[in-house]
Image 1 (cartoon, rainbow, N blue to C red):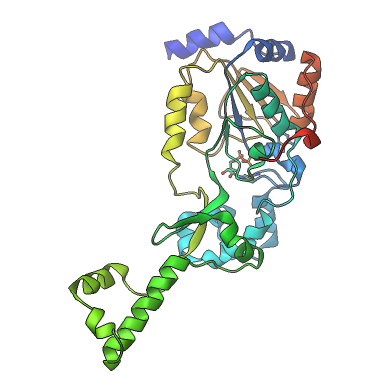
Image 2 (image 1 turned 120 degrees about the horizontal axis):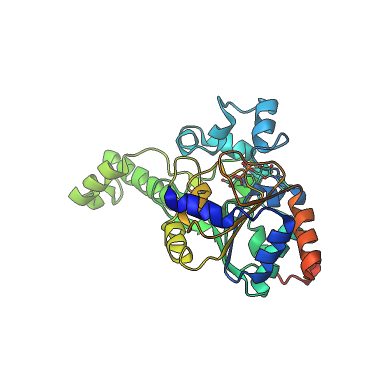
Amino acid sequence: LSRVLRRRQRLSHLSSLEDALGLLKNSKKIIVLSGAGISTSCGIPDFRSSTGLYAQLQEEGKYDLDDPQQMFDIHYFRERPEVFYSFAKQIYPSNFVPSPCHRWIKLLEDKGKLLRNYTQNIDTLESLAGVEKVLQCHGSFKTASCLRCKTRVPGQNIETFIMSQQIPYCPKCREEADRRQQMKKELKTGKGKGKALWDDDEEEEENEWGGGEPGIMKPNITFFGQALDSEFDECLFKDREEVDLLVIIGTSLKVAPVSEVLTHIPHSVPQIYINLTPVHHVKPDICLLGDADSIVTYLSSKLGWTIPAPAAIPLP
Ligand code: CNA
């Protein structure tokens, strides 16, 4: 506690826009922690705003949910995958263009100031803006995995299922299921090679397999109830030694463990919070409230920086 108080005393003078400008100008190892609020201007709703996905899901009432958060709950997904797949096309990244915020993060990288962008977003717009030092803490639609056999495929393989609101099943599991069914049929009828092939190992595997349907494919976005990739802890462990400024943009800081980044970096590192709405459960040193695109554009103009235009961004 005394360490936190000492830090508070040291940083208590920070509060203004001038301070934010000074910090951005002088910092060389900035962590940007971003959330859904930096993509709302691209047309992708966030979760918790009054017009966000949770409010929409509640209003629509067409999905069989007790709570809108269930849409992204792994236990519910295992039970009722059809609910997620009837909705997923609404959040599937398609023709979105990076916002000024995404491009501002790229600008920080180009200026050699970005240590890493920890994004909670799954829309991959940081990569589209050309940001290289980005960690997609909650994964993305870039790949999908089978819940049963863990086979990983490119996300494109399930795109048509998402767009046609169908459940994608694992092709590898399906092959195995068909093979087993055929062998069992041959075993029963005594015809074909099934009987000869069905040995003790096969019996054991059959028990492990447990019969039934092939596994369901799930995009590799992190649902509630799923652990984050170990890369998150590894990066944070390294970065906390180097970071000299934390800039938090467009997030309600409600989803752990990403929201806990604030407490994991040294208390001496200043924090700037840029968001439409205030946050009450943490106290960043500087809060700049308003539209994030307007704020970063204003900060850049004051610093004499130019945010790259979307057309100038090469596709990854
Ligand atoms: P959230 O809880 O919905 O919070 C978003 C925050 O952004 C809110 O506090 C808003 O006030 C703020 N906000 C909205 N628009 C703006 C704006 N124009 N300028 C400034 N601030 C704005 O979402 P979080 O990111 O905090 O929560 C993490 C979840 C959201 C992650 O698991 C994501 O996967 C998930 N998510 C991602 C996307 C995406 O990839 N674009 C979209 C929706 C949800």
